[in-house]
Image (cartoon, rainbow, N blue to C red):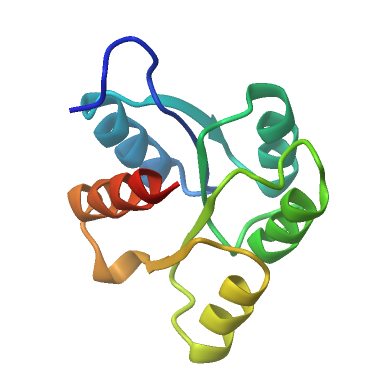
Length: 129
């Protein structure tokens, strides 16, 4: 269980309200502090303002797509150390390779994981950092 002293802050960037609420609820129940953004532009602003411990980022979004958000986060000195995990339905090998090459810590295909599995993967990535 996540310690009570300092909750791990996760930034969820997802334009699908149902998924955003579902993942927010799941991470809250697991003891995370959840900050949510509905598009890439808002996600970038919140990453700088909130300094999350990890970012869970959708790829296909309005305003700025996830690949662009990832590149901007990794170029910015304030946010480049924050681990980013792409959570998307883009399952093509070239999309996965692009995400990992651009600095993502992980790449999860939404259709392949239920929320509790996503939480487990995030905890595993955080335990490495």
